[in-house]
Image (cartoon, rainbow, N blue to C red; front, side):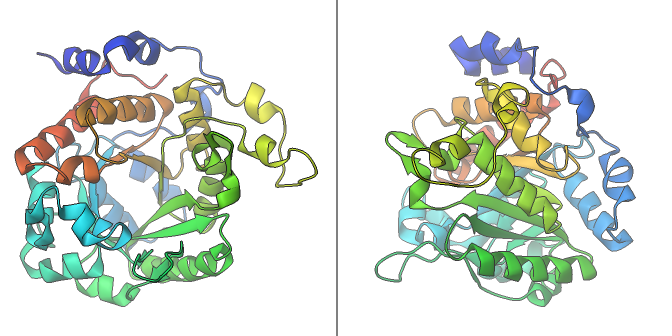
Length: 357
């Protein structure tokens, strides 16, 4: 079975809705789109040093998607973010860091993203075999009551010493702690670039006010798009963002007597629509029109993981995104099934019939 036939089968009833969509609100001609020469043509005109460009070359030049301009990354930092027991109970072999790296290798990923401890435990054996992306901050869940705050867990120099080609961090934009996180991560990214490493930013939203009624505006295209814009402003080379599911976050938060942010109605009428590809394209547009690659997250594991992962990849690719970073869908199942899922994602980016709209 050809790639496109498998993809259509996974999409099912949504196949035509996603694959035949041809009238985006924002033309792809406005964007810098993924391709094999992306580093030379886009990053190469920036102030990134030759060492950073070399690190980006390692990221984009490894695995099954090597030199396509796309990324397939395995992220496993849930041992801290979601507690190790809850994360690894479905498959306890991943308590051992080596199996995390093995999954990324077997899955032909561009890189493996994890904590200082996980990657440091096996760095001498694997840092030269697959690019390491070290996550430098985390939200821990042992403080009572639980709180949402990203704190640093190590140093940039430590990541460099273990052979990492990139560092990643999360900022909870919209949270009370976001000012401190922005300053911390901006300084960390400056140091990472000075040492020749690439930077990846998880641009997540976190504020209870972003939930209104039965709608969760943490997943709104306008709010996540603005988070992306803040992320590229502090010089993230790659942006990680959740796939948008709705729009109108600024509108909802400006209801009644509240005053929040700034909006222009054309954000919703001319720069986007309700179609999921348009919502994702608005995220890409806010990544300096695609100068920083957008990778969307795979989300939690469930009953139809391959189908959901393929759908997310199709939306991301057709919108002009740079790939997927999928963890729980891959490691919370037997390794062979995790590899199958990662390859299904990669098939989308290798499939010529799935085009950028």
